[in-house]
Figure 1 (cartoon, rainbow, N blue to C red):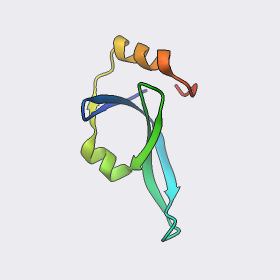
Figure 2 (figure 1 turned 180 degrees about the vertical axis):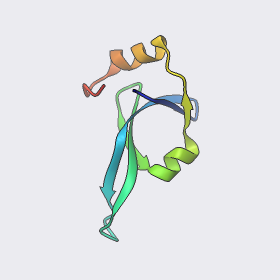
Figure 3 (figure 1 turned 60 degrees about the vertical axis):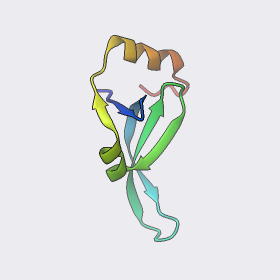
Length: 75
């Protein structure tokens, strides 16, 4: 199920939990990949994402906003 989050008045769609290799420690770290309504994709450290982003209820209007702007084909 697609989850949506709000941060600083903007809405984002969570894509997935991902791993990113720290270039200094060379260890894998937990991150979250998420997408803006405009189609931009970002990653943020998982604990920071959980702390800053608030989950919002999905609606047909919200789903349609992401479907109209989806550049990646990620559902």
